[in-house]
Image (cartoon, rainbow, N blue to C red; front, side, top):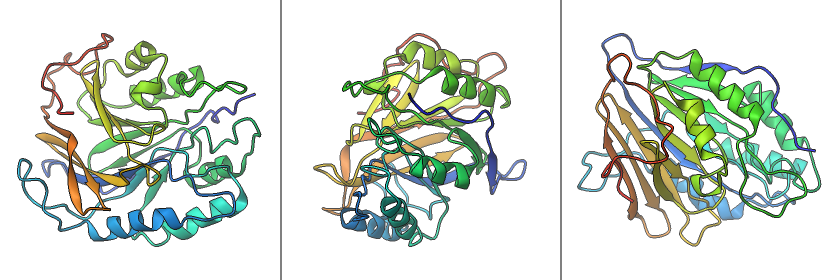
Length: 296
């Protein structure tokens, strides 16, 4: 038996710009912290320190400028190795060190897998109102989904389940065709087994980015013209965090290797954004993207 999201969502609002002010939003992304069952999060400490120090760091020369203070931090799931009370309390302690809001998703480790547990799921429900929820920040809409794996399977790949697809369709139906949307889930593009259905659920809306985790390393792919960015994990061979910046004209995503205090050469997301004309917004159901839409 797998856990399903409740039938409602909560929309939070962070500093939506006034009309004519324009979008300039910076946020950080990471995933798969795998806090141990005994609450040990020492392996995450360098990532926390890096995020606290990233503002003011010059971007790669090809991008220009410096990293601004983030509006928030987003995490794409598997916060816990197994969702014990100690692991959840350690996550609270860890994120309390960050002076920005944090938005976390639940992944397959967070629901307990073969030994189900509601502990982390209840944390997400209590904090965000539902396992599937949405928020607005800086003129961008974020739609967050709980994605996990079917019980009793060893296959690390799987679908976005019908309940979450229904939530995504309903949430995006409430957005205008010109509103930039970021979709976040635990699954990465390589672990999704129903990509056509996911793209269809996003069709007709201006989805500019899909965030995922699960496979621990930063990877960038393009499907249906939409960049899918797999977020890094502190458990990776190259522990890192990713910095995203969204403006009216540009979407940037670059990954900071905090062990070596350097930007990774790949993946680099740097694409122009244009407000689509009526009838032109939204993802194609075709699983392909325009050549040169993203660097990977």
